[in-house]
Image (cartoon, rainbow, N blue to C red; front, side, top):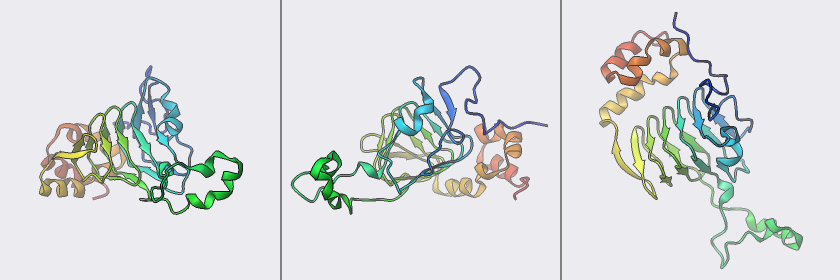
Length: 216
């Protein structure tokens, strides 16, 4: 009987401390991560919450789906990074203390795009940056160094600064078929049986496998 990988192990690759599964790592109630999503960094991958999720003062959440791959240096900029832009200065005086702290009302009503949401099976290249409130669809690919300022469609490939849609990985009808299959929701044991199909099969193959799923 095939045995699925353990989603609770912090370092899933023996001898490779640079790779961490995020679900057993994160402690912040403002971050939700699905099983098997991982971060790869040779310089303390376990510091992901403090080094890669920035200005996260809440209440907005960072939500990452299952089976996402995050390359070294991927960063999520959260809404706490916003400054006022409706006056002559953008400087956040009240955060500096002294009598300025009495003017904290000046920091209310800042731009807010809500939660940052990443779908399932998303691949982030080295050094990609995601701006506040962005929603990234299932199966998307974010190119190395991309600065994602707007939503990314399911199975879209984006790159550049600001990131633009380079192409879609599949046609619209095929994207709809893939979303209907939603292999990432299959039980881990069933995924294990069909890893070859998931990684290298056709959509027809995936649909055939899905028809045998215990959740079908």
